[in-house]
Image (cartoon, rainbow, N blue to C red; front, top):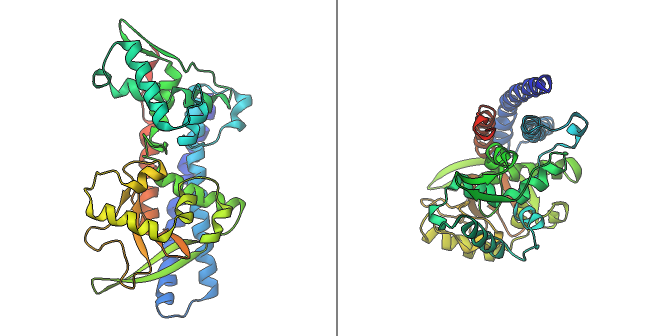
Length: 346
C-alpha cells in the first residue's frame, strides 16, 4: 500500500508539472487569440490550438482531483481490488439527502433533525459543541455512503461519552481530507472546483464548450476576457448541478437577484443563493456593478470565478479565474497531503 501511495504522489507531482507547462503554452496562444479578436483577424490554427490547450487544462485539473481522491482513499485503507472504484464524487446537497436516514424532503428538515439528535445525545447546546465534532457528525451518513462504493466500511452513527464525541475515525479522516472540496449548502469551499469539473465532464462526454472572447469597457478601460460559452439550450447536455442551474436561469430573474446582492451587505445570504441551495458564494463588483454599459450582459462571481450571462448564453472565465482556481487547488491538495491524522487513531 505504501508503494501505491508513493506512486500516486509521483502522479500528483507530474500533473502539477503538466498544468504548469500547459498554462504557459496556453498563455501565449490565448493572448494572441484575444489580440486577434480585438482586431477581428482570428487565425483558425491559433484558435484551434488555444481551444485544445484549454481542453487539456480542464482535463488535467479534473485528473489531479481524482488522483488526490485516490491518495486519500489509499490512506483510508481501500483494498487493492477496489482501487478502480475510486473517483471524485461531489458531496453536494443531493448526496446529503440521499444518504440521510428517513430520506428528509429538504436540507432544512435534515439539519433540524440532526441538531435535535446531536444535542439530545450530548446534552449540550449547539453553541457548546465544537465544529470539529459537529461537522464530521453532520456529514457522517454521506461520507460512509461515498466511501462504501470503494469497499471502505465505516460507521455513520456517533455517540457521546465521558471524553467527548465518539465519531468513527475513518469518517473524521475523510472529512479532514475532503472538506475543501465539498459543494453543498453547509460547506461550499469546493464550488469553484466543481464548476470547472462540470465543464470538463460536458467536454469529455457531450459537447465542446468553445473558448469565446468578450471585449468590455469598464470606466473607459477596454478589457478582454476569454470564456467558455454555454448557449441556453446547451443545458440539456449538463448534469444537474450549479453550472446547469446558471445556464438555465432566467436573465431577468438573475438581474433582479444581482441587484439585491449589489445593494446588500457582503455576507448577507441572497435569495439567489437560497434558490441554488448554496451559501456565501455569490459576489458582484461593488465598484463597476453587475450590468454592462449596453445592459445586455450580467457580470458576477461564483466562489471567485467570473461569470457573464446574456439572454442567450452563459460564460465562465477561463482566464484569471481558472488560474486562481488552479493555484488554490494545488494549495488545497498539498494541505491535505501534509495532514497528520495520528490523533484519530488513538
